[in-house]
Image (cartoon, rainbow, N blue to C red; front, side):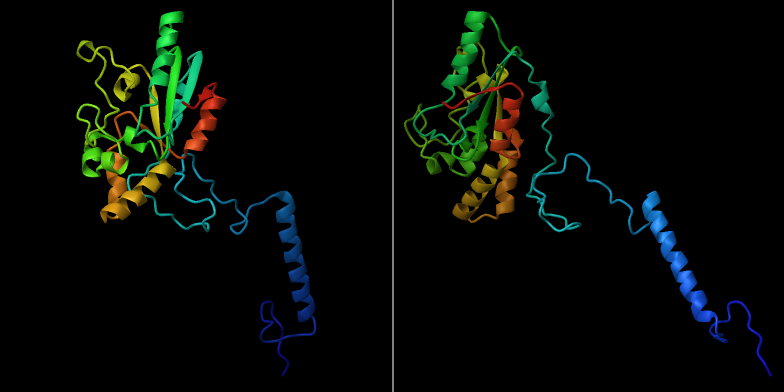
Length: 260
């Protein structure tokens, strides 16, 4: 008895033309794939991966394997540098006091003199005049609250004395009082300068180094120390990804660089 060959029954009756038909189908399939490439047709395997959204935190390393989430330090957030674009004064000055030794004197007389001179000579004040003050590691205590000075003994660790007592400082001696009749107009201190529009920033890379230093000295966990430091920055201080990055960005926006 002779079996009849039906379409789709190649597995049952591999006739003499079966191999030829399979090679033909494979060839047609190959040409179809080439057609998809030349026409730009997307397939699940070749579809473009979603692009990352803006504002990714700098704490996520660029050299990390794709799809691997990086652990961010406690208190970190996505970087918002939009405040840079609000500084539109005609006269702009950056004071790089980042790694100055602040144990003997304050570097804040320079930005105070700059603002005073424009006020007295040209009758110009913020927002027509902009001042930013960049701080890294050595000058970190300037950006720290009184509570941080007391808790982490910053005066002792940085060898800073309180000018009122002559003893090791247990408070931020650079803060000063807000300007007003009782303060005599302010002076070369953080709060009066902030009231005149000056912006202080804190380098995040330097803050990480300070975190490691204080964690080692106090026996606390780095995560706890960092959370304290971030929460204890003076009001108005801008935590920025890197000091050197911001130095370049403000100069691109017309700031003149000065190192006291």
